[in-house]
Image 1: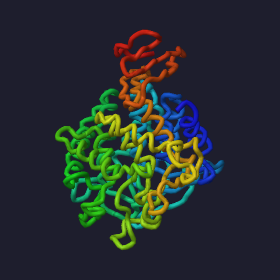
Image 2: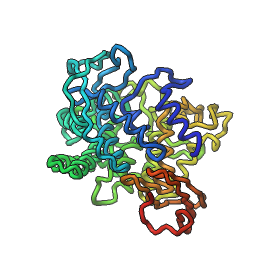
Image 3: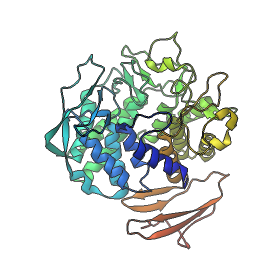
Image 4: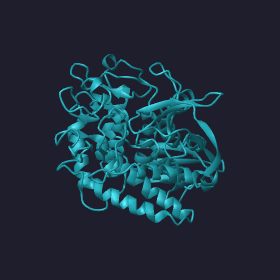
Length: 449
């Protein structure tokens, strides 16, 4: 936590954007926003820089450049129909302002990019767009992102359209509705409404209503023991009734939008029971994998069963599941998942990857269980850092000040954290199973810093 988790995120993801396994050097829109925000305890500058750069790579219509390479004659990148990219700007802005208290960022004027919108049947386009001369405040860039999501419409179940893939790009041909995106969009709309209220903007009600409606409609995707992942355009559930996908279950909790009932708890139980493979110490993204014999959902089936996003462990998703378990008081389940993700807890002769950084994926394919895929260049490092510090140790920023509310599992007895506040004052935070002490005094819940 003190070295490799932060180093992997800052040096590899934010700075180099390359590794032995992926040497493109491109700047990913949603990747950089997540990595920057997940390093807020280290420095707020990473997140601020990424938010401003993301705004500069948003088109006037509200959609965004999926990834790009910086170039002296104009940045070159790809415009897509990907449905979740632009929402990460809303998420990042809300995270940053809530945690740092730097609301001045909301008023910074930045241009949009200009190019012809994609045609409906045009999958994507690699291009060098123009930078517009008109500018809009960062808040308006975030609003444009939400409005673009709304304008893309909703399907028969009231859920947002999948586009060319939601968080899982490999579900590229579903062409229907996304349950995960429903949770995430409801989450972003609710938090953006709160931000607008803080800024005195009268437009908050629109997004409060959107969040409420989306949460209710997404909750209807209940399949009896867990939530469906998505629907094809004709209404057929993706994977039928027997495939469970972890991200639809974890975000039922992380979205913080389900107001009644115990479905998120039941969904989490189902995910832990069905996806955690204790024998091989892996947490599958979903089960069963997609096969070539079933209805085509996209290039996900091309990975092979149990590889990468196709039913292997995709560490991003595993960490979200651990975070959801912490939120619901399932500390031991959460700790078990986090422990499984550590290379040192694997047979390294089989794992066959670096023992000091996290892997993006670990295979669950028959005969290849527990073998690591690519490492280093993965956003799971930042999410792991956040899961430990924020969800387990309970170190949470609010407007630049720190609170502590640990959720320690039985195996974790104590630790000491040194945190420097915005004024440059260092604080020693001693956490154990009985108490929290800050600078030698019993902590009584007051904000630090």
